[in-house]
Image (cartoon, rainbow, N blue to C red; front, side, top):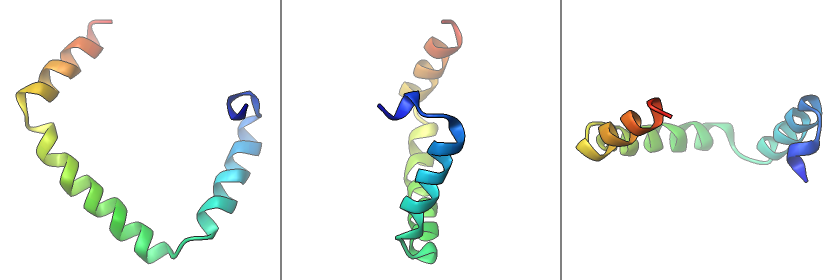
Length: 56
């Protein structure tokens, strides 16, 4: 199971995984995801979810 690996091992796996992808394409995808999600952050549903999380 990955969660039982030391952090250094997980970071190395992540680096190898990310190295397969074009960094410019990945950067654009991250920006697109932020843009898409930002509309959700403004919703009443998101506010309620944050309130529930903060009161745990």
